Length: 321
Image 1 (tube, rainbow, N blue to C red):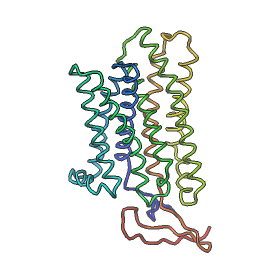
Image 2: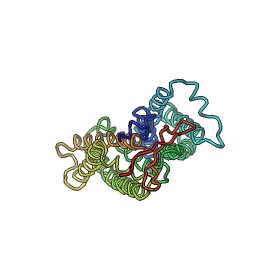
Image 3: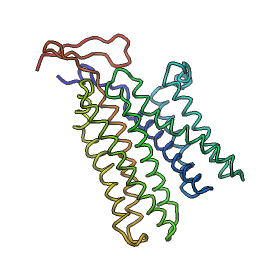
Image 4: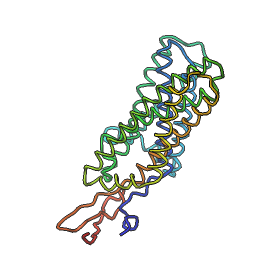
């Protein structure tokens, strides 16, 4: 029996929510890395500026995707109520605070002479709320209790690591496109490729742990099997979005003695773009592969008919295998 027919697969969240989660992760990840680089350098290096210019706009566009999915701005305003009981409400205020701080940081850095302790304090606060934004993109899924595949502590970890990876690739792409030429830019790219290798390896470990844990649980095993059979996940994300960028970053880090060698910048840009596309495909695959649990009782399989948002689900009976 096709699970799409009896409603077992969730079909309420698709590409718009995936884009919202992706852009939230990109913006928060790019800001976090850029702000940390600025604090470490005691000022504002080029990666800091790229991170600030990416952070707020990415969250703004992601919010517009969320509004399009909700269908009404009124629903977005109502999302901020019930702070004590709703993760959606908490996320609303976390993201709002991050957007305000990232915009303030950008304006002060680019258009005023404010520096020193004031800017550092704003950067620290922005990093805190940026990390909260990255984690919330995974916690939001865990709050949907009808989908066991999402209801695990591993999802926020995967989304935080992926946000750092995609944010880092965004900075890398910004340096390639706008960082100028010469040995200084090449040295910056060489350092960032080394960081990219470590972050991508971390994402490989995080996603492997998440899928292994999901496969071990009966309620989430079907979702794990579905995502591993999905071409966009295996080919688009795992191969083109993780493996290929990892190989390209390793080639750039260890395979080129001359940092200004021909093709260096193009290779870095290709790896960054593939990594960004992979981050979007990851979120979409996790969303669309979320399934309602299947119960095995006395040789029969029972599946809930209703979608997770419906308050009174029915029960569907399948013949034994």
